[in-house]
Every structure is written in structure tokens, then in C-alpha cells.
Length: 274
Ligand SMILES: [Cu+2]
Image 1 (cartoon, rainbow, N blue to C red):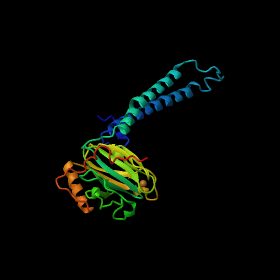
Image 2: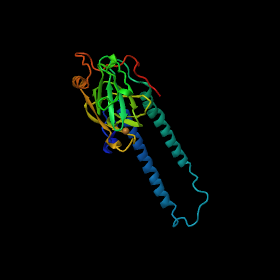
Image 3: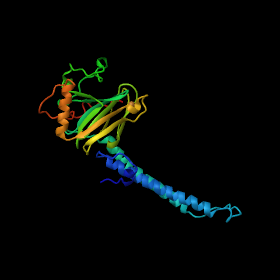
Image 4: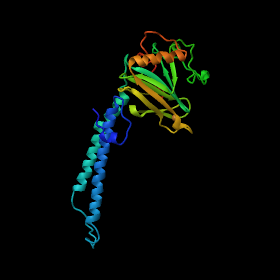
């Protein structure tokens, strides 16, 4: 269930991923909490201006307040902030980084940023990513995929267009060819820096079909703002259709009747190369 009344009215992009509901609820709680603090401290400030005005207090009082209420209020705020951090924020983050999905349902995609576009690499039905070589990089082969590698035969590459079937977990290995970019899908509540020389995984489960914007969230050069791609979340059948058609266009071997882009067995192609 979503608890995001304030967030929605403030114009945040609607959530379309499974974990996004927890993030939205957390943001919502923080905003209400800050609103209460703002109104509370603002009222207190206004009250002190009125209460201690010079007209009423011609002579300064050097003792000040003797009430312990402000200390108790500060203590309450501290306890609430600890609860928000430990009971909500920390578990959400732990779930994001410690429990990557695994199994035959997982779609595995490599994403490689470059000035100023996003490359997508799907492993194909064999579940193995083909070898990429920087010497083979050209305008029509931005990833330098080596089609002579047997593992690359059924691989699919696409530029600025990513497709995913709805309700299937997706693990994305993010990297970059040149400078630091940031692979960000606001609707999926996902953002991961793309760092040259590193392969950093992130994941999400899209739960709503539709077309979503992928942006670069790291100032990466003069056309940074134009570094956009599209994510299409669709039914399994539509995804399979797109995959086969695009695979044919990109010179990949299409395996009829085979499931599309199964997960890699365990974490073999899941190198985290920090
Ligand atoms: Cu960028």
C-alpha cells in the first residue's frame, strides 16, 4: 500500500517498482515530520518574539527559563529521528544492497553509459554475455561486442531503449565507457552511478506496464541533459516480440521458442569489479 499523499501532491514521478513503495512511504514520513517541526519551531519563535518583547520586559532577565520542556522536546525529536533511521531507512537500504534477486525469473542487463547515450546489453537465451573488446568499438557496435564469441551469438544490444517484462526482477550491471554518469529511472526509484572501470549492480522489480524515462543524473558534459533513454515495461509476450525483432536487427541469432534472457546461473556474469 502506498502512503504518499504529500509526495504525490508535490509532483514526484509516480512509483512503478516494488521497492519504491517503501521509499515513498519513508519520504512521506520525513516530509510530514519536517512539516511538524517547521510549524512547531516557527510557532515557538513567533511566541518568543511576542512574549519577550521589550514593551513587556523593559529590564532584561538574566536567569531565563527554568522549564525543562525544551529539553524534553529536543529529546523527543532525537528519539523520533533514531527510530526513522534505524527502523525504516536502514532496513530499506539493507534490503536494496544485501538481497539481490536470483533464480530463473531474473532478467540480467548490462548498461554502459557514454557521452551522451545509454547502451543496453542482453545476454540472450543462453544466459551468457558475450565478450566485449574495446578494439571492436565502432558507431554501429558501441559496446565492442565480439560476434565471433559463441556466447555473443544470441546477445542483443540496443541504444537508448530498454525493455523489461512486468513483475520480473531485473538486475542491472552499470558501468561507463568514459566519464562518471548516473543511471537513473525516477519512476523505478533507482539511481546508480556509472563509473568507468567499475561494474556496479543495482536491481528493481517493475510492477506497472508503461513507458518511463531513463536519465543521466550526474553532470557529465555539455549534452548531459540530452542523455536520455526509454524504458518500456510490457507483458511477457510483448517483451519476447521486441527482443526477437531487435535481436534480428542487431545481427543476433534468434532462438525461436526459447525463453528470453533468462538469469545467469548463480552470479557467474555478475562480476562486481570495484
Ligand atoms: Cu551522463
